Length: 413
Ligand code: FIX
Ligand code: ZN
Image (cartoon, rainbow, N blue to C red):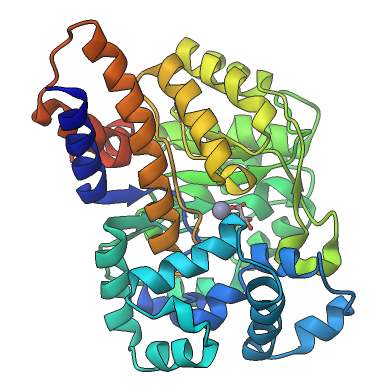
């Protein structure tokens, strides 16, 4: 295989691989309004709201009092018409429109609205999964979210393209409040986390893992996250989450480094990041060798140390270029470093899509970036006369975009 053939094969395999998206905020159709889709949701994505306010002195509350369409009109005018849409989130909107076959050159938001108005939710889910080349997504499922819990309690869902992950931020990051909700649900827990509470929290976790058929437990954590420490969070993790994660054989996914609501007036757009302590990942992997940990970190500065930690502990799966790292220049840098450090034993990307349409742009952009890294790394071994077959490249690509995840879970896909 020469370099030109290599490029053709890699691009072909990366562009056609059916993706398992291991972390999103999407929902199956049964979850009704929790599933966001369409041009007005796309243009009012919280990333774009933050970017809009770079140019606007409008009072935050006045903006959020507007309808989604009015917000989208303001954002479109400011970020797409008055300034060229070169940021990753701005460019992403253009990629979605183009991949759907709409005429981006008209810049006519109302004409795009007509297209989306013509689609049913069912048809549009099918369309997006097809155009994005995604076979399945993992949702973020939080039983403490009242709107979501009622769906789980009353109807559930049956679309196998949408997998569940049990999200436990309120339990771990705000037990002082969430224990009251647990009591209302019939769990005999108390504020001071006595032995009965430990047992009941474990019952809550097991019951919801079963109810959701959750693939993993997940939580987002601040830069100050530490275990062990004298805190409720540390105790619940070591005495409840770790044992149940092992007993149920589901990984514990830690998303580390988010500073919540540094500008609370921005809502979801108000979260920031901070450098975190990778030592906590090392401690957990070392002390709980029979547990599986998925970890992504938000600070660019943490990535190399996290990759080296994954070299030390086979029960650690590094995943994604999370949130503020999901930009071309950073995805390229991190993916190269990971491939040089871990070979192909990591999950290079997840979309974190909050709006269904984003699967199209987040994966279009990431496929191209990951393909370029693969081409360079394969070229290096071709230079050493290592022969490569198309089947081997297909195998490697399927590992990166799907099978590494399922094999780490212990599911033979
Ligand atoms: O905690 C998370 O799952 C984060 O991904 C979200 O809170 C964040 O708003 C997001 O969607 C980033 O892409
Ligand atoms: Zn997320």
